[in-house]
Every structure is written in structure tokens, then in C-alpha cells.
Image (cartoon, rainbow, N blue to C red; front, side):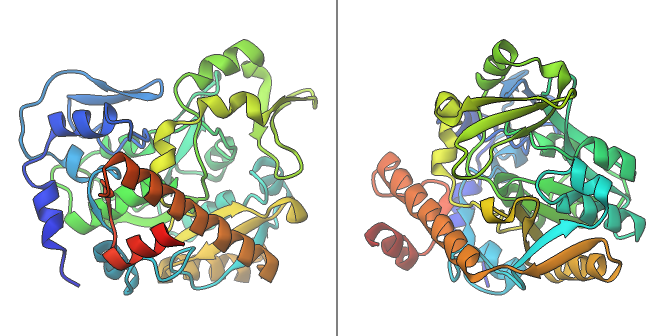
Amino acid sequence: MEENPETKTKLMNKGHTDLINEVVEGGLCVYCGACAGGCPYLTAYKGRIVVMDNCDREDGQCYQFCPRTFTDMDFLSNKFFGEPFGANEIGFSRNLLLAKAADARIHERGQDGGVVTALLTVAIEEGLIDAAIVAKMDEEKVPNGFVARTREQLLECARNSYEPCPTLQELNGLPYDSTEKLGIVSLPCHSAALSKMKAYKTRNRVNLENVNLIIGLFCGWTLAEGFHGYLQDNFDLKNIVKFDIPHSPGHTYDAYYKDGTKKEVELEDIRKYINPACDYCWDMTAEFSDVSVGSGRSKYKGWNTLIPRTGTGEKLVELAMEKGVLETKPLPEENIMNLKKACLNKKKSAVRKLSKKYNGDLGYLGISHTLKEKLLSD
């Protein structure tokens, strides 16, 4: 499918200044790091994009690859999945599974079922990738991009943060001539940026053809810049080993300590820290990934929901099953229906809020008029 001419019009002759005005100051920045690390003018620092110096380029990759600048959804969906965007509430899928790591150490260290760590371990050990770019929390529990090359390094990174991580800054900072085969663990916004990078091709950045695997994480929202101060005031961060937001009926934000104790705060107490930009996100399940991973929900505690989307993702999941690395079973129909409903509601909410923000237009979200009207009218 040919790219919509509107895409070129909306992305051409746009650069650093437009990115700052439209995205960062426009309340759309999701802190994915796609604009950082590839030039000396922008960097990700403590939950925000910092302008190091002004850039006068009128055509910038920082603007082109941002997931919150105009994104032709049909073009990308046809390019990567061979079908228009919006045909399915949860995106293109080859299977719908519940899964968990068979290895007890990975299962214990991982979030929910430990599936992401298990898949990355198989991918590295089988030579599908040489390294994985993941989020790693420092001693103060600030997440940053990290290149993991071993099982032990993956285990060190196997916990959720809930704060945004500029993972793509780590990718952009790799040597231009690197031949390492890479995997990336991404939120939906990272996956969207990566799909734009692959579709439009990067200049003077690491070769995106070497990104062989994208594992996307389900995400409803992240907690913005001011949240870390809240954590510092209310938790002993150096002694925390895991954060979790359990599903209904929990409604709490939980921190687990090295001594085995747990501290809970009401989820309502931290909702004020949700990044407002997440209100405009259309994607809950990282649809532009090779495989997507989320929680198994309350009935299946200790399991992950697993969605292989591409041939690459499907082959990796099958390989992990053959080697006994993953235990799997079909995703129950109730879970499928609940997931579809949640994803559709996310799309509807984003379209309504974007339409209100842009007076009937949808800003960055380039979807068909038919789909737009359907989401607005339902």
C-alpha cells in the first residue's frame, strides 16, 4: 500500500522546533526517547526531554520518528501485517495464549509469569539476537535503557517500574556501524516509534534492520515526572525489589522489600501522577510488536497474556514452547472478550480526546475517516 500523501505533507520540513512546540510543550510527550541520543540537541533526563541547544534543521528525524507526530496507521499496518489498521480491537494476532516461564528463577524474578525474560533468554541463547535493549532500574529505582547480553543481566532487569523509560535513547546511542542483532522491550509508544523508524529508514543511526525482535508490553498509562518524588518521600527505595499494581479487587500500588514485607498505597493516591499525554494514546497492547505480553489478570495470577503478532514472534514463542521454556494454554474466551473491550475503550477514549483537542482533527493519529466516525459514534 502506498503511503498517504498527507503523511509526507505533515512530516516534511518539520524538525526540532516543531517537535518541542507540538509534542513536548503540546502535552503529548511520552518520554520514549525516540528523539534523544541521535544528536547533541536533545536528551532524556529525569522523566523529561531536555533541550541542550537549539537546532535550526528544518527536516529532522527527531520529528519524523516521534510516535506523537503524524502517524499513518493504515500505511504502517499494511507494511508490517498486510492489513489495514483497526480491523481488530487488539491488532493483528497469530495466537492468543496464557503463558509462564517454566524456569522457577525466571518466574520468581519476572513480572507476573516471567515470559518476557524467558523469551529474551531463548532468543539470545539460540542466536536470534545478540543483545536486548531493556529498562533497568538504578538503586533509586529510576528506569533507563540498558543493553543486556546475558541471562544474568536479563534477570537483573526483570521487574516493572511504571515510570516511563527512554529506552530508544539507548538504541539511538549505539554505534552507527554496529552489526549486533538486537531485541527491544517496548511500551506501545516505543513500538510505534520503532515502526516509523523501520518504515521511513533512519539516517546516521544504528541500522534498524538489525532490530530483529520487538517485545511489546501492555500499558494503560505511565506515571509522570513528579511521581518519583512521591516514591522518594513514601518508600525506602534502595531496599525495594519489586513494584506491582495487582488487578481487581486490589486497587493498590504495592512495593515489595528485600526482607519480604510489602507496603501498599491506594491507587487513587497516585492517579494524579499519570502522564496526561497517556490520555491521547490509542494502543494498550503494543500492536506494532513481534509479540505482545501483558498480565494474566487476577484469575490467572502468575501467568502472562501472550500475543504473537508476526512470523518472528510466532517462531520465537513456538521455539520457547518446544524447548520447555514456556508453559502455555489457550487464552480463555472471557479473557479475550475483556481484553478486546478494554482495547476498544482505549481507542474510543483517545479518538474522542484528540478530536476535542484538535477541533475535530485527530492530530498525530492518522486513521481512516470510516474508523474515526465508527469510534466517535459508538
